[in-house]
Image 1: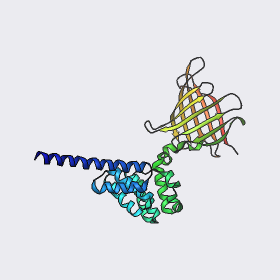
Image 2 (image 1 turned 45 degrees about the vertical axis):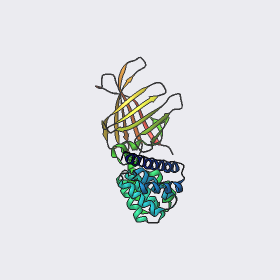
Image 3 (image 1 turned 90 degrees about the horizontal axis):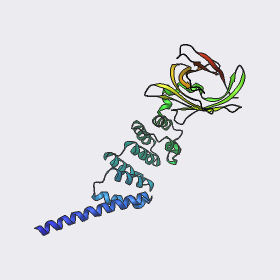
Length: 295
């Protein structure tokens, strides 16, 4: 009796070990991009073992990579049942439907993926599998949803409030050019970069962004003369954004700086700096500049 029990136990261990060895072999083949071998090994492993979501997903991808798209779709569905991240499932299934020229189903799974957070906008635009669908109305609508997932700031009015400052500008004071300013949007639209230069020694840069925690705009400026301002929004209206910051002068004295941007009707932008040495009771203009788009 004991001998039979021991043999049964050893057989069970051997089967388990063989299964895990087979699974590791499949994974190694997959990582080496030997997809034909990986598909065969995963099929053998999953025939005898339950497997997890990654096993089914890797089998689906392997099958798709060797153009077995009908089988790949079934395996993607199995991976989905085993709770593999749905956005990945939708993207993989969409590629197989695209290869099978089933556009309606491709759009359907991509819309589902977009609803589940699919944000692979670059892949959708550049993957050869979707090249034939780039001008399709349904596909373009999906791209908008996926782009919104990838870059949520682009669709937010709060983040877009300061877009009127974006551009390549000549900076004028009393009609005389005093500098150049390049204002650009960071990728994704969550920040605005400033790169200010003059004909002389002075230059500076800032990063501008909306903070979703305090729900205010911030500007962090550093100038070539060592001047640092950490501006915080104090007023925001259509075509207007105002900031305030503490400022330490050359002698170590602390004062206040107020910075106001105003969009003019002709598309120019007024930039007004004001200073206060009495904690904001009174303000004195220190720079009144006009931004005019370069021609």
